Image (tube, helix red, strand yellow):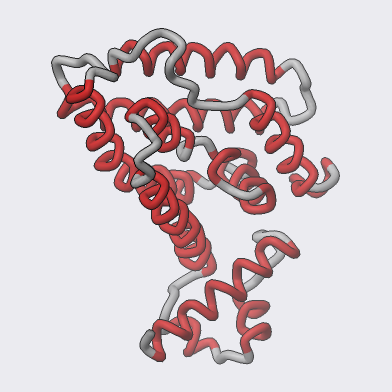
Length: 234
C-alpha cells in the first residue's frame, strides 16, 4: 500500500471511530485532525469535507460486505434461490450493517434527511448487487430454479425493488421509532416484497426468504439502543 493510501485509510479509521463513539453531528474535521495529529492541509489533500469522509467510510463498509458475499456465493452447497436470498438481504440496512453503523445511517439518511448520503449509498448497492444478481438469475434459469422470459433484465429490477423496499422500511421506522405497531406494517410490506420477488423471478411460492423477522426486530432494537435516548436523536 502506498504512503498516500495508508494516510487515507488512517483518516477513515479515525473518522469512523469518532462518528460511532460521539456521533457524526458532534464530530468535526478538527476532531479528526486532533486524533491523527494531522494538519488541515494534509486532511484536505484527501477529502474536501467531513461528508466526503462519511461517504468513503460507508462505501468501504459496503465493498467489504460484497467481498465477503462473493466468497459465500462460491460455496457449492448454495443453490440459486439461496444465493438470491443472500444477495437481496444485503439491501436491508439492518441485515447488512452492525448495529452502531446501522443506527448512524438510519439517523443521518432517514431521521435527519441527508438525501445526498442516501443517494450515494443506493448507488453503491445497485452497482454492486446488479451483476451478482444477474449471474444468479441466469444460473437459476439454466437449472430450472427460476422461470423468466426476460432473464437479462430481471436482476436489476429485483435489486431496485429491494433497495426501494429498504428505503420504505427505514423511513417507516424513523417516523414511528417508538411505535411497536410499526412492525406489523413492516411485516406486511416485507411479505408483499417476498411474494413479488418470487413472481418476478418465477420462483416457487414460499421458496424465497429475503428476511428473518425475528432477526430484523432484534437488529432494529440494537440500532435503537445505539441511537441513545430520544433527546439525543434530534
